[in-house]
Every structure is written in structure tokens, then in C-alpha cells.
Length: 198
Ligand SMILES: C[S@@+](CC[C@H](N)C(=O)[O-])C[C@H]1O[C@@H](n2cnc3c(N)ncnc32)[C@H](O)[C@@H]1O
Image 1 (cartoon, helix red, strand yellow):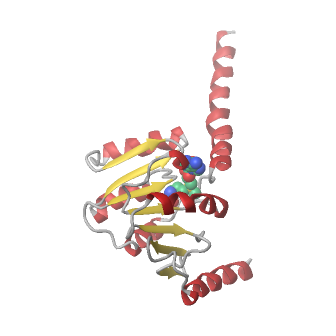
Image 2 (cartoon, rainbow, N blue to C red):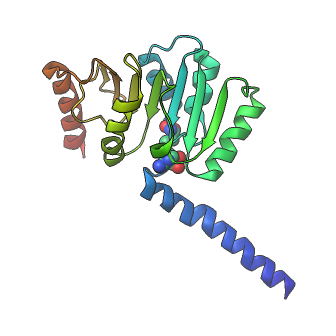
Image 3 (cartoon, rainbow, N blue to C red):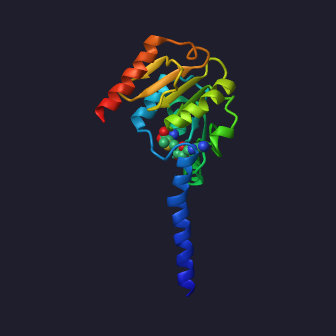
């Protein structure tokens, strides 16, 4: 009888962690899907990070972007994720890799976090979430801060760099808000080539 009761609670915990939590993160901003290691390096290189600059990854998942920013680019980095499982996992990785002096992981909703310390913001979310985050980034980021988005562009901003192979877009605050038809055409070509491949 006691065994059946324990089994019940184990099943409840598994359903919450592996069923409801991923569904909830999907509703809040984006489902879980990792950026490949090669594209992580590509994104951070495109941002032209200087040592000790502050990199924020919005929806940091297993922490691969903030860990790479700290280890390979000597940045300070902050990850924000709403899923406590990923926060636990990423904090463990930060500790095991000895990066607690330059990397931290916040458990929270990026829509209500202060992003004003960021020199670089990275994202791999969905189009609707980028659309909602755009005005927050415009209000909080300083001129010169870079925003690097994987797969989903920011409508109405002109990227400074586009990697059409990896589908990565790099924007700079204070410059990307000015229309640049040539750069916007690069994004349109990328989106069109992706949809014609489907
Ligand atoms: C597609 S994954 C990207 C993970 C990582 N940035 C990468 O590129 O490998 C999106 C992440 O965003 C998190 N997320 C979704 N909505 C969020 C929100 N409103 N606030 C914080 N994190 C959120 C999810 O839990 C998930 O880990």
C-alpha cells in the first residue's frame, strides 16, 4: 500500500516535470530546443564580444550559450529561464565548470527582468515572442548593445549581419532601428529560401 502511494507521487512529479513544465514554457515564450554548438559560437562571434562584456541569453535552457560566452569569449554572462529544471541543470554546469565568478542563471520570466546591463542579448525563441520583446529591448538596451537571434528575425529592424546558412541575425541598438532596404532584403531572401525548402 505504501509502495503504491509512493509510486503515485513519483508519477505526479514526472508528469509535472516532463509534461506540464515544457507545455508551460511553450505558452510563456518558446518550447525547449537547443542551438547547436557550432551555431552558438557563430552567434557569439557575430556579436564581436569584448572581454568582460555582459551577455544575456533569454531562455537559457541548458546554459550552452552563457557557458560558451564565459569560457571562449571571456564575457560575463547571465541566463534567464522560466523552467526550474533547466535552471537547476545550468547552475550545476556553471558550478562544475568553475564559472560562478562570471556566470549566473536566473529563474524567472525574461519579460519582467531588467535587461539594461546587457551588452549583448542572445535569443532562440519563436517569432511571436521576438515581436513581443522588441519594444522592451528598445527601451532597456543602451545604444551599441547587440542582439543576436537564431532563426527568428526582429521585424522592422535592419540586421548588421545575416548568416543565411545558420539563420542568425545580428542587430545593433541605435543603428538597426534605421531602415536599410538592402539588409532587410537579405532577411527576406533567407525567410523565402527557408519556406521554399519546406
Ligand atoms: C528554444 S530554447 C533555447 C535554449 C537556449 N537559449 C539555446 O539556444 O540553446 C527556449 C528556452 O526559453 C525558455 N523560455 C520560454 N519562455 C520563457 C520566458 N518567458 N522566460 C524565460 N525563459 C523562457 C524555455 O524554457 C527554453 O529553455
